[in-house]
Amino acid sequence: MVGWFSKVVVATTVRMPKWFVRWVSRRYVAGPRLDDAVEVMKRLTSEGACFTVDVLGEEITSMDEATFFLEEYIRVMNAIQEHQFDANLSIKPTAFGLLIDPEQGLQNIRKLVSMAAEHDMFVRLDMEDHRVTTSTIDVVLALHKEGLTNVGTVLQGRLFRTLADIEWLETELGGLADYRICKGIYLEPEDISFTGYRDIVDATNAAIDSMFAAGAYVGVATHDLPVIDHTLSALESYGMGPGKEDPRKNAGPPRKNKGPGYEFQMLLGVRGPLRRKLLNAGHRTRVYIPYGEKWYEYSIRRLKENPTIGTQVAKAFLMPWTNRP
Ligand code: FDA
Image (cartoon, rainbow, N blue to C red; front, side, top):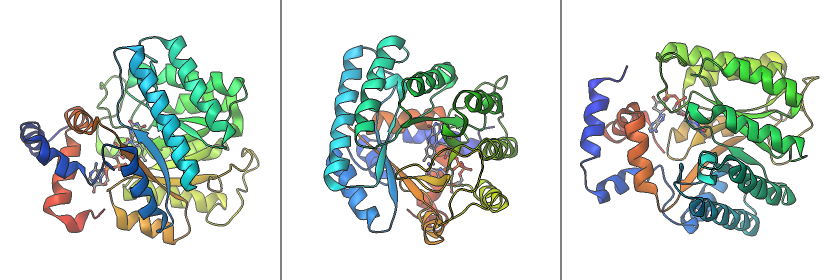
């Protein structure tokens, strides 16, 4: 249920001048250029964070746009190498063409993932809405079959299908499965997803348990304490944690530039003190850094898709003590 306050925030924001939206989104988006992302990574590297970089943009209308994304991500990869950042890549499969030409989309993603493999770099396929859940997983499976194991996807706790997807990936990849688990940002139809807060938290926690049990690498992407606390208890029950080798018998091999079987992930600008607390306790903590010319479209679209974000953003500005960057 989206409350009236969220609706008001969305209705107001979409009418605001672009400079105002830019001012608000500065906190969440590094800036329009790759240099902006580099500056943010330099700053946060001194805190001990690691990163995943996202070039803003998603569903495209022509395959020429996919070429832009491929080339831009190659620039990102080079910048990461040049500055020796502890960073990997997050891509939106539809920006590579998955919806308009699946074969060509796969080819574009393959190209990036194989270049990344040469640099020991991991590529995360962000999960978009339910139209592409199966095809995104299919891309990961196809690339793993070709020997490209430096790729993994995201699963969304809110979708009913997620536990079955974990079983599917466990059968296909065993301990090589490498996930980001999040609640899911898209407000999906009620016949395929949970819609209430408590149900979504419970389903996300069940997915985390199932991933740990399957020996997978688990990137827990959340700012929500009930999910973080659940993860910390799960880690304890498996004897996993900072500085410990992953003791699970069914775990995949240790991953370069990754944590001991798990990590936490958070968005740039959201709940910095909580992120730093996890970091100081020794957990590997990755910050998702979006940048790109399309920051305006991205901000407005996210807001329209999920108006509760508007409430969180407004709360962060009106009551800054609840959420510092
Ligand atoms: P919840 O929404 O309950 O937030 C908990 C608290 O965090 C809020 O009360 C607020 O204080 C703060 N907060 C959260 N988001 C905020 C915001 N935008 N601004 C200000 N405060 C905020 N989704 C998806 O469908 N596909 C994907 O690939 C990804 N990828 C991804 C990567 C990473 C690193 C993260 C952290 C998240 C995603 N997501 C995503 C988004 C995810 O599915 C989810 O929508 C958000 O993380 C919000 O859910 P939380 O678990 O943080 O809880």
